[in-house]
Image 1 (tube, rainbow, N blue to C red):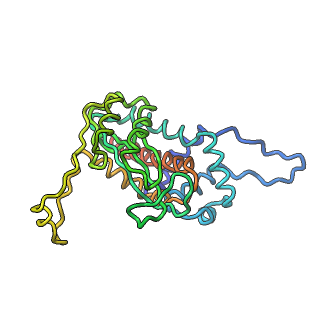
Image 2 (image 1 turned 45 degrees about the vertical axis):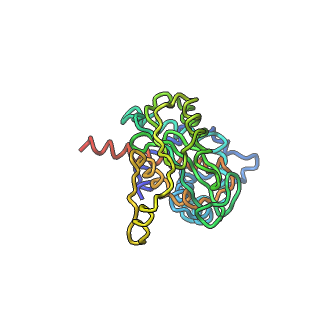
Image 3 (image 1 turned 30 degrees about the horizontal axis):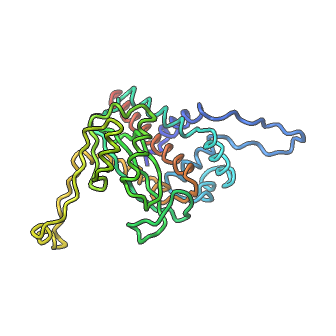
Length: 285
């Protein structure tokens, strides 16, 4: 997987290193304590868990630190806001080098497993009511995430529209959106009101329609599928696929929402880094 390529790992760790909190002193009055595990080794273990979806124990076996050390270092970085600072730097770098295109913006949610439960989880309506979580992400014309939130799997997409737009507004990008594309799950007056209150007047959201008898008869045969029309929403669907490639995204075993948001930030940072490296290779050939 490209996220584990040495060039990507080195670039992301360089970004992370610049935002790490001050390191505690290694000295001990009795000189009998163990040496602190390096941040690079801990980052490798956290990255292995994120990409493969393995447990902390397996991630510790794939790297030097122990399971407890990986958990503690992850918590330390979360409390210091390291992952949030990383994603802001990655988005700024992408906007400066390639440029965000906010002429066509789309929002959509994606549901996934959360077998350990915890905060912001709920019964997944698409997985026989098993415990799950979801994210709602807003992307630019080419699928670059510019705002996202996490919630339980039983939360309707339309209920996450407002907090997703607030996440975009917190980065100062909401006023630059020209057209917003939504699917039928958002159809309704509350959606239009929410968008209008934030200055979004060009909203494309197809209305829900009852299937006609002729259409139902046409696609009754299981071998014949109805045509899939995504329009300008296909970039956000592709972005959800990118995020789902990471094991801890599609089957999350954390129990707190800040841990999931930290994983989302790190995942999107990896995606942006890969795109920037590909862009550099394209123009250096």
